[in-house]
Length: 346
Image (cartoon, rainbow, N blue to C red; front, side):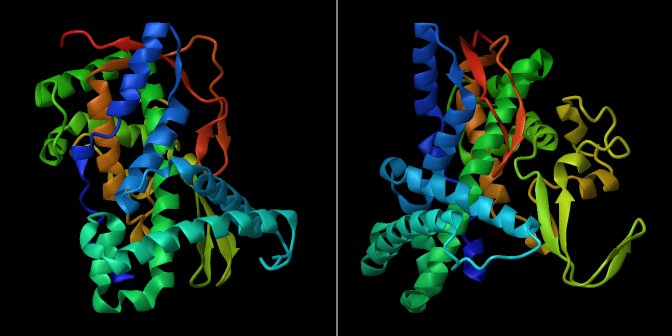
């Protein structure tokens, strides 16, 4: 749907995403307690998406959204690998769970759409902008509107929250990179919250995010259907075959990336990437199916890192297991427990 591109390039940084969580982190530090950065970044990303989409705090609906996306991805994965595709109407236990959660989400989104159709001038959120893009015919496209915002919410919160968590983890493990990151924040921002115009000057911070998503791409595989017959490295591909692209493997192939397991943000410095690397780097996919929320996600991550990185330093808790697990995203199975320390003078 063409109108969905209208609102994605920008991001309202005036909401200062991350400030409230930093207050909680500083309170935890005063109590001598670590924080679970993975859980906190998931919650933060969910609230950012809910406010951006619906102007609505998701406290009462978050579980419905989270449960639905997790069950939905489980359904998709099973259908992709199953030799026999069971129709969604067939009442398996998984299908019944999915239908129950989906009804709750549909009811919530339908209410938000009706609110805006009744008086859209009151709303400046993404859903309001989307309805304005449809114009007078918006009421005839309720199902399409629902599909757009549900897709944006599901695709936007878990991936971004997971990427932020891994980024904090990597900065906590690499003092030199963390020092350059904090120096850039001090030089560009000087202790103030960033505006949208500031984000273009945070070049090293952007490189940190890019390298984090190379090592730990939240969307670690992509599925595509072959549009035509082909042959790849001796393997025959037939038109209509389902293909799985292992993004996590491509991001660590030594033929593309020197020292592929090392955290090196500078490899994304201007002019450094080769043509092969650009083609092999797929955290947001590529081509016609590239994620339309790429700019929103990067802007959100830059803003969170800029707000929180000026106030606290996060370091891993010794002995806490960090294990990568595949599910909806490539996530830390046991969370990411980290100590909170104040940021000293630059």
